[in-house]
Amino acid sequence: VHALATSADGRAIFADGSPQVWVIDPDHPEGYMKLRFKHTSAIDLEQEGIVAVTVTANGRALLGARDGGVAWTSKALRVVEERFPRESQRPPLALDADNGWVYVLRAGVLDRFAMPRKGEEDDTRPPAQTLRLQRAATCMVTAPGGMLVLAGPQSDDQLGRLWTVDAETLAWEPLALRERTLLEAAHSDDSGRKKPDFTQVRSKLTGPAISKVSVDAVISATPAFWVTRDTGAILERPSIAMEATDVLPADALFLGCGPAGLLHGFADFARARNLDAVLSLETYMGCGFGVCNACPVATNPDGPLGFWPYTRTCIEGPVFPLSSIQF
Image 1 (cartoon, one colour):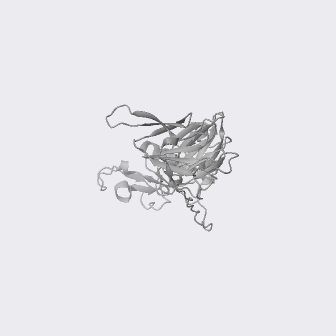
Image 2 (cartoon, helix red, strand yellow; image 1 turned 45 degrees about the vertical axis):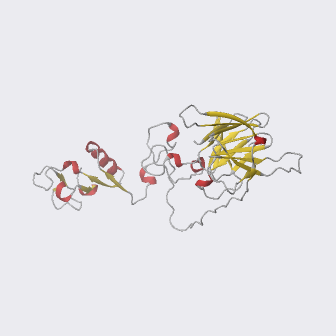
Image 3 (cartoon, helix red, strand yellow; image 1 turned 180 degrees about the vertical axis):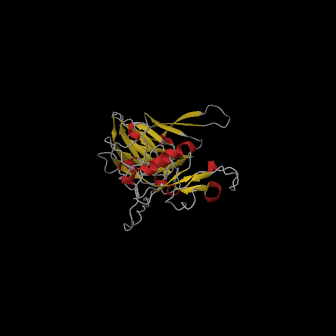
């Protein structure tokens, strides 16, 4: 989580670095809302990721993106305005606003953007301004009377410095704006065989990390079947159990490789369900070249090794099709 704020009505607003922020009511976590810039690409781009969120005293939410973009909402949490600086594309360190300006602190730079005022059609203020700070600042908030409170580190390992300035006395310079360049999603070819859609869960061996999974990815997933286990919290497993033979393709191949004490149970399970399986019996190996006779395994008379009652793991193995041995 890059940023976390509380809305005027008690909802949580948090940014995970993706191009949208999530709005969740703690009393009703099953529902959610998302906020994003009006101009957002059809595909997720890292530079469009929102990494700063602030809620102002009058209930507006401010959003800051990695590419320098800033947006603000109405009190109902609907994005109403957004700005994109042309020169500076540094990610925001802090956001805040008063009745007339949205202030954005970046590394070494302070920007501000004019918020449209009701009833002032002839507003002569510049749409955006910037200045280079004389002191390093990492935090910033607005204060009554048009004041700004900034804070930053000191070079002598002290606690840091805190200072207040009148925003109107600063040497502001015009800041050029731009339009955000948007990317469209690549054309997808719907032809060909469909693959099962695996939805990521917390405990798994392969696939993207859970930190890469967005809320929409989970909600919109339509897997043909779920692969899970019958342990863990009830919310971490499906509510319907299905036989493996009902959901796995006919050519699925299973490999049993240990622990050695569980291989017999695995073999019984595979035979009972008519699953195609192979066993890895390297733990039976002794000398490694078939002299000590410590590794023979009984063969299946009807299998491919049935011409001899036993087969040696060191020579013919150690991996055997389950249909070729008695195990």
